[in-house]
Image 1 (cartoon, rainbow, N blue to C red):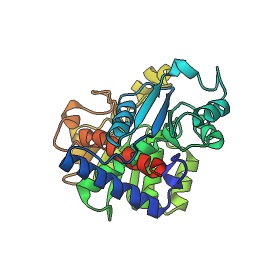
Image 2: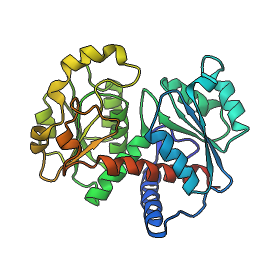
Image 3: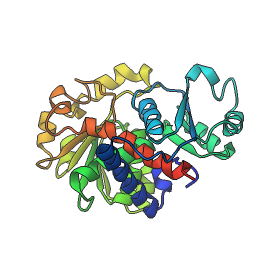
Image 4: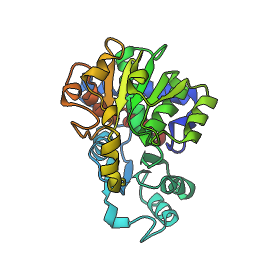
Length: 303
């Protein structure tokens, strides 16, 4: 696996290996207070076009815990695609670092880095997908359930990049996916078609209560993502019926868990009572960004 661009590109063996390794690294850290320095002497370059809490901190901490170093490059330092071409950034950074992680707007910037870099590229987020988040999400579900067999995930809200990676994960996990969005905010048809062609049981709804019926997990995300700020007022008028609140959680299976990739706009897509309640796994999920990404880093860089 030279690059980590999409969960859909993984083989079944790579998927299982990453989840198993993430669990092993998490257990090692909990039991020993440290991880073995598997990435000693390795440097991760981190290119950011979008601000971040979890992505930056989890990658930096992960590299430190594995004995390596991470270097943060802010949006104004490169202006990739404006001040300097994606291809030139890839070529230059490949001479300095062991791998590159990029958190971008345009997915073409990720694929461009992968085309021209001679080091592994990790997709830290693009407007198309969010595979590192998806790995952490499925790691959290696996920890709670022990197995993906017979499980159903309901996604409520905007059919965005996070949903794309959840559908990609369903290819390997076999989890059934129920999606409820307002009309006009469905995931891209090509994403749904690709998932179905690879065996994913996915259904689309406009009623969130229909989507959560029989669900073992409920997932939501902000209604207005970074880069969509001009649509805020329009979206706030459309999305309130899709709020994940106590009543909606009560319509799912007993013991259903609630997930959110964060940051949360409390009182909009999720209520305080749900985010801080007994069904919430938001903080385990955020922590698992660290462990899932360490598994990705090890498999790409520990050579």
